[in-house]
Image 1 (cartoon, rainbow, N blue to C red):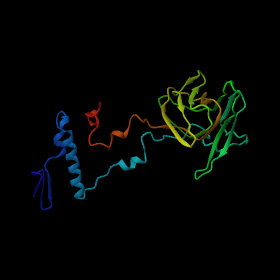
Image 2: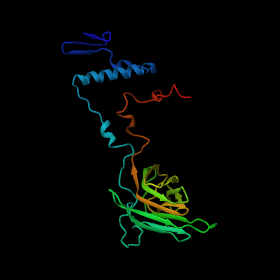
Image 3: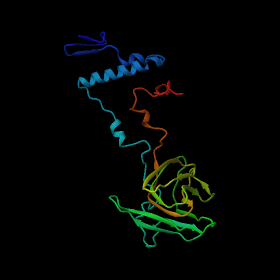
Image 4: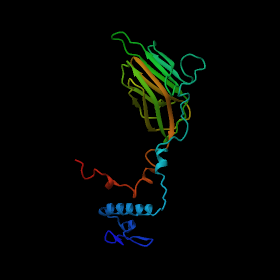
Length: 259
């Protein structure tokens, strides 16, 4: 019995697919045949599946292993602010400064299923016309490798903060050179997870300083601060296993409808 003008046919236990996808890949590729190639690939795969031929794909497993996955632990120490051996309110490995003085940086236990700790920075209002304070929380001694990609992630919220911009980078203190492009974090009134991916500009095994600073008053909470090396997010397996062919500009679904 023939189906589709004989493209598909069956006789007994034998099934014929007489328009195979690879017929359209010989010689220089013709873009007007790409859709036919994809549809015949779908037909061949569906036919094999209906006949009980099993095929494995890493697609589902890759959802649990995203592009830019971590390649190691965070280079920041005590980023969860869990330890404070001298009980001064400032988590171990961290330092806090404010100019002019008058603010406070203390640990606060988080309430909720996850629990944990946050570092709470509180800067009181200043007199009318006075210069707002410059505030910084920092950590020294992060080993940074030039060309390596890193992900900074943290949870944060703010209350009455007079600035909308919290800036961070890692400095090489030998030359006061920023090892990452300056990045801005804008905290909200509710807890939010912030994440940014950047490539290190240079290598510095020592003499580095992670800095997060702002100019203003109000209250800022920081929790779960991590700076971890990750896989290169600009290359890798997004091209593997997700397409029948290597995607090109032609595959853009809005190519012909953009204005």
